Length: 419
Image 1 (cartoon, helix red, strand yellow):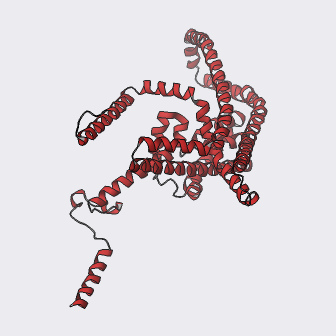
Image 2: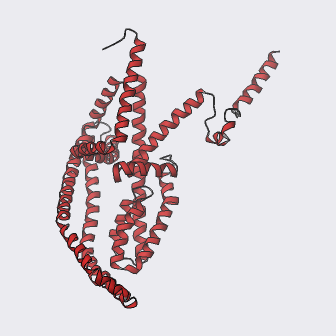
Image 3: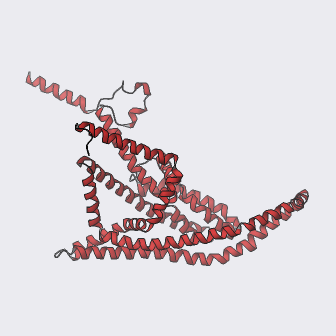
């Protein structure tokens, strides 16, 4: 429906409406973030199996593509069988994914089960008696504390009673957490099924998505959308693959170091450190908290050495191993990586901390491209070094491109020959 006969006014009205709608959405998201987060949480809860399916399909896709290319080029090169190659690729990718998940589960669960007696023994025979000995020594050294304890005994007992009275709701919360965990496991299983269907229908789904985008946007816009999605896919894939390889190396190094220093729970702690290392910057420290508690319970004297070892390992990863593996695939400085982790982590939790860096890297590249094009349109330098000069000199002092003097000399020579 057109309100004006002049096409120009209709275009202006369209952009005004779009701007107003986007502004209202942003204002709502900023000032009503709790409500938006709840709505977003409901959406995630409903579509969790589909989201799991998309994530798993994204992880399995490279394996499927490699297997499919192998069969199409080596086995069915003379008589192409694309559907059969795709099916074989999906089957192999699914088997590899299930094998990796099974290996992780079979490594973690037996280690946890075997660690439980040691944890119980450490708490009952080491930690509690140690605290009691320390408390008795304090009472002997400072007798006045005994009087204070006796005077405050009534308050202490009432506090204990109040704590015990809250155990009922806490138990309900624990049971609710168990149900949520069971629901997440169910959604994960359904996600694997969705992932298989996603991969089998990959070409058709991509064609349908492109069809919708082309129908809704003009040529320049939909080409830009395709460019952005391609860059996002590459950034996300390179980052996740690099972090998985990096985390595997860190987990192995952690296990080797713990074996050298004869620390307890080598397999369990190495898995915790390796898995949490997927989170950039903060990962090793997040994993070090439960790992330190385990070591504190088993062998308290070694916990300080373990913390020092984790700090050294994180520095090794952050300065040598990580940059070697990831290289310049992300293209963000340490400041922007920290910025993206904090922002996305506060909004979306652990998942935001993992995917926030590559997504922010895409946005960073897009903004950088737009700024570069705008500077070129103003005939201004695009290198960062130029803008390190004082602000009052920017625009007054221009460094001419090195090609300009050469062109002037060549033109002068040609003019001399014509004369």
